[in-house]
Image 1 (spheres, rainbow, N blue to C red):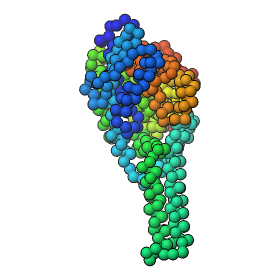
Image 2: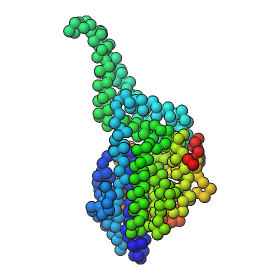
Image 3: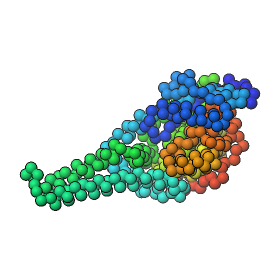
Image 4: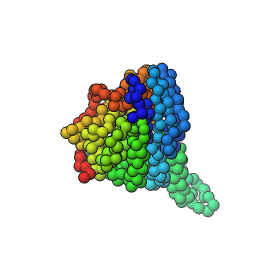
Length: 411
């Protein structure tokens, strides 16, 4: 490999970042990285600079860091599937309410919702949030429509020859629809977005949609190409829903024997995972098999980072163990906490603790007092993920109890 510098084991790195269910353009991730890496460098006392991509990635950027005497170059690529996300969100109001009913039935009817609640209440509340908001919006719209019809019905005159009672009843549906359309257009509460998110995972009861499978195959090819390059580490980062996508991609790649003999170090970093939201569904045999396979794989290092302060993730839940598929030879993942309450200043935590969505992205941000988790040193620094966490014990209070009802795996 290219690095022979004393005191570091990574001189060049490829980072493949897999976003969660997010319709935004990859430039949003680039700008977040640019903004937050500068903050972290100022806090931690090192130098880091972003530049144009050096690889043939469709979406990406390069990073150069100087930490102590060690200089490292990294190329970061965003694994693009926002188009699939946007396509899944292109449903109308009626279709969204049908998604609500169907998704609720899948999670409740399968028993998954109640078992998920035994792990962490936060993600379950987050899943129920869009359901409650959409129902509240519907009730409000129906009440407004009924109020309009009732008010018109009690008027004493006629309008253009039509009895106002009839006119009110005819117009009430348009009032209801107009209000619901306004709520959808101004989705500041993110109810529609989150409903589409959960519906996307649940619509096939845990199986991957064909479009997602095809894109994952493309991602796997990109990783295979990176493993052929003269780099010291290929780091795959999966955030939120991207965590289980990354697991399946790497399981496919290694299972197929596509890891070169003289390959760079291969590492997986999962952040803020929501794996049980899929692995607890009846037809998630593919994901459960991939979790079990990767858990005992010797060719990788897998570190999972969550934080109890992130109410949208299954914090400190070992995704393999809680899914009920931990093999006897289980090695991974190493589950650690980003410990928001300790790694952020009290005033920072106070300002952010109710900003649930932004907290879910805090793993990609700067920390006031980072401990052993520093996203920018991990993605652009001189130490590989394997070396950085070698000998590191899991965080206390890791949840490993198997509560999944469905533990069958794909052959």
